[in-house]
Image (tube, rainbow, N blue to C red; front, side):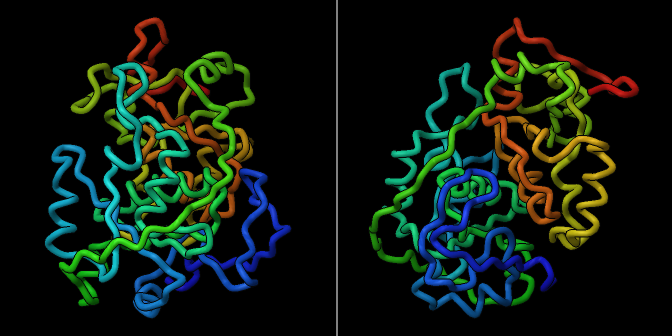
Length: 316
């Protein structure tokens, strides 16, 4: 799906459309900022300016991703763990996958061999759910050349592309980012409820959105006023992202008159919500924000309101 390999040509004075941070000087080379197809990645496996990160993770079996990586991965790929590397410690009040301190995360990126000039490609076997979280985190740090492998590990294997069990030797470097402010919190979401200027979009499955069959978080339900866009609806039957035109039409139908800059995306713990943000990016709908704590943080405080069942007509 070549139209989903999204390319931008940037100079040092270009601005990131969401963070406002000046990009690094990428020597006017083409960079990938959203999705990359398997053929393009295969051509760049030996490219020293590219680096691949394996983000496979199973919420029900947190060590499974690491084991699968050890058994087989894209040659040269490094592994980062959702719980250990892409999240901060849990307190019981800050959600299941709170954002890590940006300095600590940048140090881990450097240890993994990621610097501020490399083209980064992330993949998983979960439809891009965890890879999208990694994508969003690098964009949060102001790093533009980061893309998610469209079709992920599953398509890579189906196409018979190279695999390896060799763990690449450490090549530590320094990652320097310019993190943007996180301006969405439980307090800000609550203060904006019903103001007509903020549109919450829940990325969880429809049953969990309605407060049914909750198997992950102790409290079922959703944030009142939220609409539902299940992140897997961003994918086609093959597990690849839908065409930009289709995504734009579907999100347009959901958002109505609301602009993308009014959207706050959330999910159970700030992971699959990033998949919706990536899909909106692919569709050209930029400016939406993430509520990192998401439902697991929101529901940890019994004083915060919750809703269940089908949304009321016109609920927002």
